[in-house]
Length: 321
Picture 1 (cartoon, helix red, strand yellow):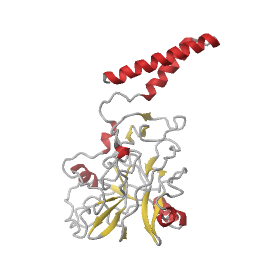
Picture 2 (picture 1 turned 120 degrees about the vertical axis):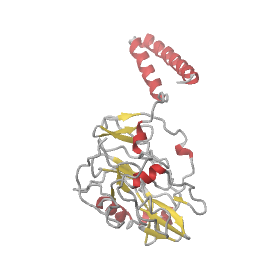
Picture 3 (picture 1 turned 135 degrees about the horizontal axis):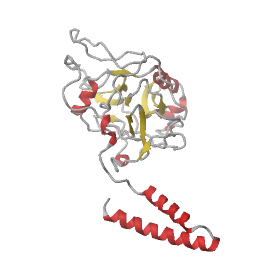
Picture 4 (picture 1 turned 135 degrees about the vertical axis):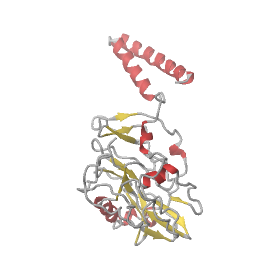
């Protein structure tokens, strides 16, 4: 911790203690209790000492592929086919900017936050609210979907579940999804630990909590909602993103797909109606997990054909941290 925060802390503590002692003298309140409360309050507002980032385990090692067979050549119609699922939606105009909204607190331990996003519907773009989701298997992390501009079109690459965070277009969705990796928490000993610097946490409900300021300026960047094209985010996949994509993954669950479809029928969620400020930016109730989901390998040693990515079963992963 540098000298400036220590100096500021000392001043704050001295003033708080002096006021507390004065109040204690007038009200005959135990002075030691008041000083302790002032100390705890001041410490809670200070940035913690920075050591190794615990959420660094969310990114895959940048070494060789986890597959036994190299993936086939990328689809010539898209330069992200080696990092994301095939596009699920196509639009002829860019999505609106990401709205600013509050995250509801997690409903309990071990839920994963999935940020809101713009989807394409019959009347244009509509907002799919952010939601806490019961993960499909132990250790599962959510890589959000994203819009990318290629060949004069805007393509939406859906998100997926995996052992590590993959590429999501460099989009800053907030709440720990700062554009690369994930700083909102990490799995440890079969439980998810939440970083309250990025999450709205009720400590009476969630028990595994820590604080780590991984990127102090993450929420100050423009809220672009797509990669490439005029005004889009300029981001390129990294080696760790490719490694994460080559690991076993699972696609969006039925509950997530249904969640998106439900809000496609809500007129107020469309940008043409809400002008970029959806009335339901996030929901409080969590989405349940599909049963018998198990991550599968996309590319098997069978002539380079796509063999994975559509498994809707549920089972506990053997890749626990």
